[in-house]
Length: 172
Image 1 (tube, rainbow, N blue to C red):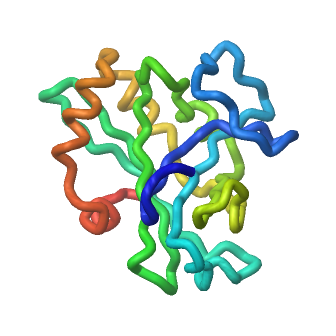
Image 2 (image 1 turned 30 degrees about the horizontal axis):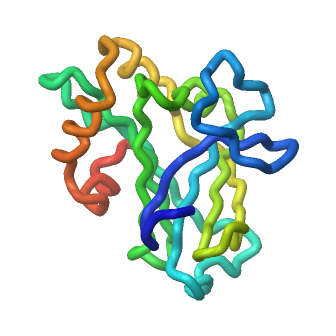
């Protein structure tokens, strides 16, 4: 993962081969074994919070509705209960021109997948946890809004509150 420590993204992964799927993939090529995975880049050597066999991950999802700009920003936040500084955020652009939206898949999945990288090409740790989030209201909200451009999404995203504030206002 070529991003600074503390950052996170989501991607599509093939559960059978455990390989990431190219961004160019369109939604008509998604298979049942293709699922979203949330990926965090951690500081090299900082694996102390990844030692537990059972994932100590808390998750919250929500939408930051910028209707005056015609954009609904869906986010997933996750953190570690014993380490409040470790809160990661991923933004989902449902109408991205470059990436099929994971929202419908997430609404059907029983599990969420998280991978942590510390500067290596191989994940330091992968956790799978139950999907206790209710994605349906977020999906309905997004679908009730006309499509927006990637530029509109980026502009609206620049006006969001800080991650800790999102954590507190998240409904799930």
